[in-house]
Length: 300
Image (cartoon, rainbow, N blue to C red; front, side, top):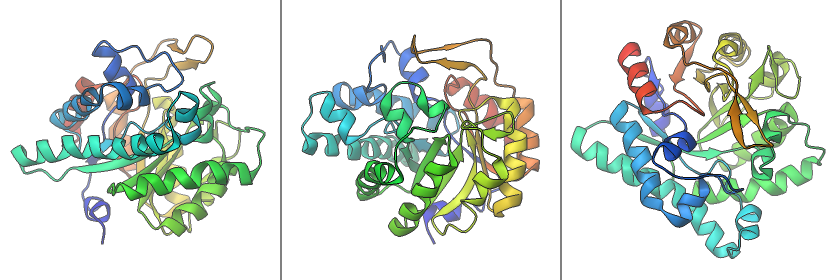
């Protein structure tokens, strides 16, 4: 049994929050196509510091800074393929560094989840919030397979396949995950009871139901108000534990590369998510260490 399977026996597992906002609060400008992955190249100690801050806030799991990192994207930024591959693997090593440090001083069991963002994230044009990329399944396989293998080779405790907007992409990812055999959670980005691509959640979660690698299913980087219905559907369709880590409910403006609108992280909603079957709960973009500390304090 994997460490992730053991941790899933707990009533509640606290996840971390957003990497980008935590780095921005530390004074970093992320306004380029590499986003948080730029710090893996330029200032990896800052990535470690953010992971450490979330663990110290009460998170049980660190999600790596590999969400938007891909070999093609890093090569476009001027890296060789070999250097790009090493940088993607390093995202797991930086999270492990923080986990080992905090575990040594506290005795807590802390996990590292290697972030696997959707194809649209690497395009850096906001299309991960739309889906329907207009590319073939073969193109999606060619994009995802090497990155999954790279991340798995760095020995994370699990893969966090996240912010997937489209069940068509899920249909490509699930066989790759099952072939790889590394335990994973899988979360869609949703809006108004559908995937971001406009597909029924019943069908979207149905794609995940028989996967042997996917151990938990749910929703992330979506408005908090959309979480409950998604978790109820995810758990009922798959019979797997739920994972819920929304953003603050703002909308991503790809033109200005910024979040727009009003949002909040209402902790009172989280108890209903637990009642609906969510076992892994945290935050995504714009949710920081202070929010995670409050969440951990309430749910524990």
